[in-house]
Length: 265
Image 1 (cartoon, rainbow, N blue to C red):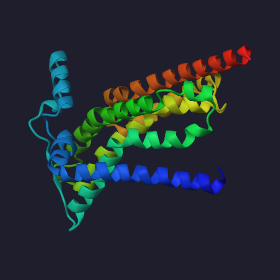
Image 2: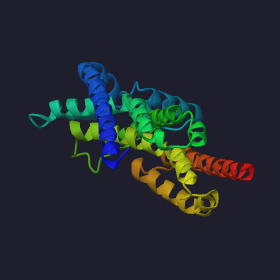
Image 3: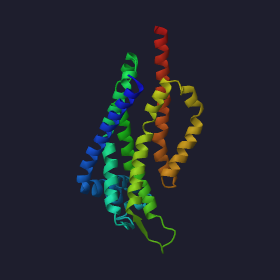
Image 4: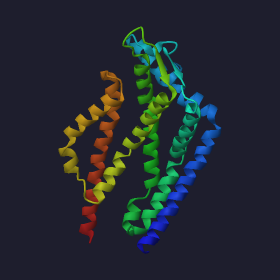
């Protein structure tokens, strides 16, 4: 295929991916009550599973916590004419992207797979399943861990009793969205390392050499996206560190397989 033919092929893959996002986004749009009342505003309710778990854990060890409160001391408000409608549209698009993520990966795989060798195709089996699983696990981690910890801290924080927290709708949705999507992307780290190792840009030695710097970056990241308390930062940092260690193992396995293939030749 010529360069223009490749571009034409890519264009159709992109069009089909966008169509999938729009279709799934439309489903999210018509399911407004469930999307907003149950999912988006779920972390605002003290009946949220994460708060229940943390309340029970704190009760068992005898620690006082605001996870056992009845309600959050803040309200969510809209101050613009188009605010609620815009939030509805944007949330539907993001929901459409999350739901259609496996299909987007499928279209991406269909575009690059013709350029792979037979052994590369066989070694990359399960690409869509693994990437999708990691992404959804990351999204769930962001939604059930990062979001409630952030909402609990930021929603109850006050510089003075004179200042009431009246959170803007867009700000609250942005917190839920960024926490979930950022975690989904971070959890793709093992897959990214796999392909970087395949093309020779990353080696296990490099990952091990810079592990201490990566640990510092992870702690900084955890401090940025979570409330400034040690417990929350540890909860966020542990799975990221595990992913990094897992990425080192994957990189070692890729290099080992490449060496065995060279010996076989």
